[in-house]
View (cartoon, helix red, strand yellow):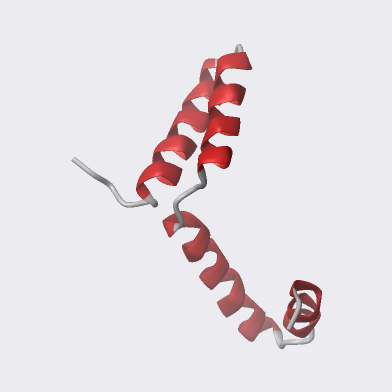
Length: 73
């Protein structure tokens, strides 16, 4: 099954089933570690931003992407 086929199947689901898919996708994204290329791209964005708020958001995304969304002390 291709991604496009999967998306079409999800679009045909009833709203409550779509909501389950959305929750799963958010959880998967939150737990997934980013690739080296993705982390490098974020680091480059961080060096170019002039906004402290944007820099903080990118930093948090880098941390989540490196550790996979789990808090590490």
